[in-house]
Length: 232
Image 1: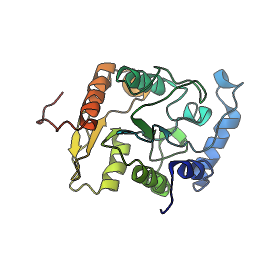
Image 2: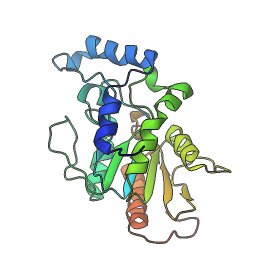
Image 3: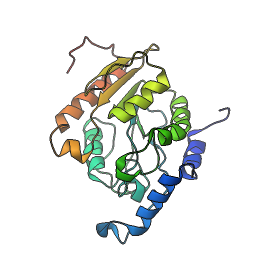
Image 4: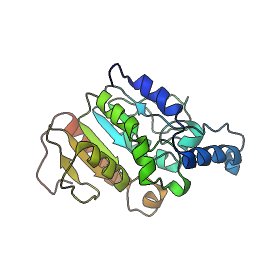
Protein backbone atom coordinates (compact mmCIF):
# COMPACT_ATOMS: atom_id res chain seq x y z
CA UNK A 1 0.00 0.00 0.00
CA UNK A 2 1.61 3.24 -1.15
CA UNK A 3 2.34 5.64 1.66
CA UNK A 4 1.58 3.05 4.32
CA UNK A 5 3.15 3.24 7.77
CA UNK A 6 3.18 1.29 11.02
CA UNK A 7 1.23 4.16 12.58
CA UNK A 8 -1.49 3.78 9.94
CA UNK A 9 -1.60 0.01 10.47
CA UNK A 10 -1.96 0.65 14.21
CA UNK A 11 -4.94 2.95 13.65
CA UNK A 12 -6.59 0.60 11.17
CA UNK A 13 -6.19 -2.37 13.52
CA UNK A 14 -7.66 -0.57 16.51
CA UNK A 15 -10.74 0.58 14.57
CA UNK A 16 -11.49 -2.80 12.93
CA UNK A 17 -14.89 -4.45 13.41
CA UNK A 18 -14.72 -6.96 10.55
CA UNK A 19 -15.42 -10.18 12.52
CA UNK A 20 -18.80 -10.09 14.33
CA UNK A 21 -18.03 -13.10 16.57
CA UNK A 22 -14.74 -11.62 17.76
CA UNK A 23 -16.17 -8.13 18.23
CA UNK A 24 -18.98 -9.54 20.38
CA UNK A 25 -16.63 -11.68 22.48
CA UNK A 26 -13.91 -9.08 23.11
CA UNK A 27 -16.54 -6.54 24.19
CA UNK A 28 -18.45 -9.05 26.34
CA UNK A 29 -15.23 -9.92 28.18
CA UNK A 30 -14.55 -6.22 28.68
CA UNK A 31 -17.90 -5.81 30.44
CA UNK A 32 -18.09 -9.04 32.43
CA UNK A 33 -14.39 -9.00 33.40
CA UNK A 34 -12.47 -11.41 35.58
CA UNK A 35 -13.04 -10.86 39.29
CA UNK A 36 -9.38 -10.07 39.94
CA UNK A 37 -9.54 -7.28 37.32
CA UNK A 38 -12.98 -5.91 38.11
CA UNK A 39 -11.59 -2.41 38.74
CA UNK A 40 -9.75 -2.32 35.40
CA UNK A 41 -10.99 -0.55 32.28
CA UNK A 42 -10.59 -3.22 29.61
CA UNK A 43 -9.17 -2.26 26.22
CA UNK A 44 -11.68 -4.61 24.52
CA UNK A 45 -10.57 -3.66 21.00
CA UNK A 46 -8.20 -5.19 18.44
CA UNK A 47 -4.59 -5.16 19.66
CA UNK A 48 -1.92 -3.60 17.41
CA UNK A 49 1.67 -4.77 17.01
CA UNK A 50 4.28 -3.52 19.42
CA UNK A 51 8.02 -2.96 19.46
CA UNK A 52 10.95 -1.50 17.55
CA UNK A 53 10.22 -0.37 13.97
CA UNK A 54 13.85 -1.23 13.14
CA UNK A 55 13.46 -4.76 14.47
CA UNK A 56 15.57 -7.57 13.05
CA UNK A 57 13.38 -10.09 14.94
CA UNK A 58 9.61 -10.35 14.44
CA UNK A 59 7.73 -12.53 16.91
CA UNK A 60 4.38 -13.85 15.73
CA UNK A 61 1.93 -15.18 18.31
CA UNK A 62 -1.67 -16.38 17.97
CA UNK A 63 -4.20 -13.80 19.23
CA UNK A 64 -4.76 -11.57 22.27
CA UNK A 65 -5.70 -13.29 25.53
CA UNK A 66 -9.12 -12.34 26.86
CA UNK A 67 -7.82 -10.98 30.19
CA UNK A 68 -4.29 -10.19 29.02
CA UNK A 69 -3.84 -8.10 25.88
CA UNK A 70 -7.61 -7.65 25.49
CA UNK A 71 -7.53 -6.01 28.91
CA UNK A 72 -4.31 -4.02 28.65
CA UNK A 73 -4.16 -3.16 24.94
CA UNK A 74 -0.63 -4.50 24.33
CA UNK A 75 0.54 -7.83 22.98
CA UNK A 76 1.37 -10.42 25.66
CA UNK A 77 0.79 -7.93 28.47
CA UNK A 78 -0.92 -8.65 31.77
CA UNK A 79 -0.92 -12.45 31.83
CA UNK A 80 1.34 -15.45 32.55
CA UNK A 81 2.19 -15.97 28.88
CA UNK A 82 3.55 -12.44 28.73
CA UNK A 83 5.47 -12.94 31.98
CA UNK A 84 7.23 -15.91 30.40
CA UNK A 85 7.91 -14.26 27.05
CA UNK A 86 9.15 -10.88 28.25
CA UNK A 87 11.40 -12.44 30.88
CA UNK A 88 13.06 -14.37 28.05
CA UNK A 89 13.29 -11.29 25.83
CA UNK A 90 14.93 -9.41 28.70
CA UNK A 91 17.49 -12.18 29.19
CA UNK A 92 18.20 -12.10 25.45
CA UNK A 93 18.68 -8.33 25.41
CA UNK A 94 15.56 -7.47 23.42
CA UNK A 95 13.58 -5.92 26.31
CA UNK A 96 14.61 -3.30 28.83
CA UNK A 97 12.73 -5.03 31.66
CA UNK A 98 11.52 -8.58 32.39
CA UNK A 99 7.87 -7.75 33.08
CA UNK A 100 4.94 -6.42 31.09
CA UNK A 101 1.98 -5.46 33.22
CA UNK A 102 0.33 -2.47 31.54
CA UNK A 103 0.59 -0.32 28.44
CA UNK A 104 2.31 2.45 30.38
CA UNK A 105 4.76 0.37 32.47
CA UNK A 106 7.87 1.64 30.65
CA UNK A 107 8.57 -1.53 28.67
CA UNK A 108 10.59 -0.97 25.50
CA UNK A 109 11.83 -3.44 22.92
CA UNK A 110 15.07 -3.04 21.00
CA UNK A 111 15.51 -5.05 17.83
CA UNK A 112 12.21 -6.90 18.20
CA UNK A 113 8.59 -6.47 17.13
CA UNK A 114 5.64 -8.53 18.41
CA UNK A 115 2.51 -9.18 16.39
CA UNK A 116 -0.13 -11.82 15.70
CA UNK A 117 -2.24 -13.19 12.82
CA UNK A 118 -5.47 -12.40 14.72
CA UNK A 119 -5.88 -9.10 16.61
CA UNK A 120 -9.01 -9.75 18.68
CA UNK A 121 -9.38 -12.12 21.62
CA UNK A 122 -11.21 -15.24 20.36
CA UNK A 123 -13.50 -17.46 22.44
CA UNK A 124 -11.54 -20.38 23.95
CA UNK A 125 -8.37 -18.91 22.36
CA UNK A 126 -9.42 -20.49 19.06
CA UNK A 127 -9.88 -18.15 16.10
CA UNK A 128 -11.28 -19.64 12.93
CA UNK A 129 -9.33 -19.85 9.69
CA UNK A 130 -11.80 -17.38 8.19
CA UNK A 131 -11.10 -14.90 10.99
CA UNK A 132 -7.38 -15.32 10.52
CA UNK A 133 -7.68 -14.72 6.79
CA UNK A 134 -9.87 -11.65 7.30
CA UNK A 135 -7.25 -10.22 9.63
CA UNK A 136 -4.30 -11.18 7.42
CA UNK A 137 -3.90 -7.83 5.59
CA UNK A 138 -2.78 -6.22 8.83
CA UNK A 139 0.03 -8.75 9.26
CA UNK A 140 0.95 -8.51 5.58
CA UNK A 141 1.26 -4.74 5.85
CA UNK A 142 3.35 -4.93 9.02
CA UNK A 143 5.76 -7.45 7.54
CA UNK A 144 6.18 -5.30 4.44
CA UNK A 145 6.97 -2.26 6.59
CA UNK A 146 9.44 -4.02 8.91
CA UNK A 147 12.15 -3.83 6.30
CA UNK A 148 15.06 -4.72 8.60
CA UNK A 149 13.52 -7.99 9.79
CA UNK A 150 15.82 -10.97 9.31
CA UNK A 151 14.26 -13.56 11.59
CA UNK A 152 10.61 -14.48 12.17
CA UNK A 153 9.96 -16.39 15.39
CA UNK A 154 6.57 -18.10 15.33
CA UNK A 155 4.99 -19.19 18.59
CA UNK A 156 2.90 -22.26 17.81
CA UNK A 157 1.52 -24.00 14.78
CA UNK A 158 -1.23 -21.48 14.03
CA UNK A 159 1.29 -18.67 13.59
CA UNK A 160 3.57 -20.95 11.58
CA UNK A 161 0.79 -21.79 9.13
CA UNK A 162 0.00 -18.11 8.64
CA UNK A 163 3.62 -17.11 8.08
CA UNK A 164 4.33 -20.06 5.79
CA UNK A 165 1.37 -18.97 3.68
CA UNK A 166 2.63 -15.38 3.58
CA UNK A 167 6.06 -16.48 2.34
CA UNK A 168 4.64 -19.15 0.00
CA UNK A 169 6.62 -22.00 1.54
CA UNK A 170 6.04 -25.20 -0.46
CA UNK A 171 6.37 -27.88 0.65
CA UNK A 172 5.94 -26.74 4.23
CA UNK A 173 7.99 -28.67 6.80
CA UNK A 174 5.97 -29.98 9.73
CA UNK A 175 5.89 -27.62 12.69
CA UNK A 176 8.06 -28.49 15.67
CA UNK A 177 9.89 -26.65 18.41
CA UNK A 178 13.29 -25.57 17.14
CA UNK A 179 12.40 -26.00 13.47
CA UNK A 180 14.31 -23.59 11.25
CA UNK A 181 13.19 -22.74 7.73
CA UNK A 182 15.55 -20.80 5.49
CA UNK A 183 13.77 -18.40 3.14
CA UNK A 184 15.03 -17.86 -0.41
CA UNK A 185 16.02 -14.26 0.34
CA UNK A 186 18.31 -15.28 3.22
CA UNK A 187 15.87 -14.58 6.02
CA UNK A 188 14.81 -17.26 8.50
CA UNK A 189 11.70 -18.60 10.18
CA UNK A 190 12.29 -20.11 13.64
CA UNK A 191 9.63 -22.11 15.46
CA UNK A 192 8.86 -22.38 19.16
CA UNK A 193 6.05 -23.88 21.14
CA UNK A 194 3.62 -21.18 22.21
CA UNK A 195 4.26 -19.50 25.56
CA UNK A 196 0.79 -20.47 26.81
CA UNK A 197 0.35 -21.62 30.41
CA UNK A 198 -0.64 -25.03 29.07
CA UNK A 199 2.89 -25.38 27.67
CA UNK A 200 4.93 -23.54 30.28
CA UNK A 201 3.24 -24.98 33.39
CA UNK A 202 3.63 -28.55 32.11
CA UNK A 203 7.26 -28.10 31.08
CA UNK A 204 6.57 -28.63 27.40
CA UNK A 205 8.26 -25.25 26.95
CA UNK A 206 10.90 -24.30 29.51
CA UNK A 207 12.81 -21.02 29.91
CA UNK A 208 15.97 -22.75 28.70
CA UNK A 209 14.22 -23.97 25.55
CA UNK A 210 13.01 -20.48 24.67
CA UNK A 211 16.40 -18.98 25.55
CA UNK A 212 18.10 -21.28 23.05
CA UNK A 213 15.69 -20.29 20.29
CA UNK A 214 16.20 -16.59 21.04
CA UNK A 215 19.97 -17.06 20.97
CA UNK A 216 19.61 -18.52 17.49
CA UNK A 217 17.33 -15.63 16.53
CA UNK A 218 19.98 -13.17 17.68
CA UNK A 219 22.65 -14.99 15.67
CA UNK A 220 20.56 -15.18 12.51
CA UNK A 221 19.54 -11.54 12.86
CA UNK A 222 23.19 -10.57 13.03
CA UNK A 223 23.78 -12.32 9.72
CA UNK A 224 25.30 -15.54 11.02
CA UNK A 225 24.87 -18.32 8.49
CA UNK A 226 22.51 -21.18 9.47
CA UNK A 227 24.30 -24.20 10.88
CA UNK A 228 23.69 -27.82 10.09
CA UNK A 229 20.53 -29.67 11.22
CA UNK A 230 20.72 -30.61 14.87
CA UNK A 231 21.59 -27.13 16.05
CA UNK A 232 20.31 -26.88 19.67
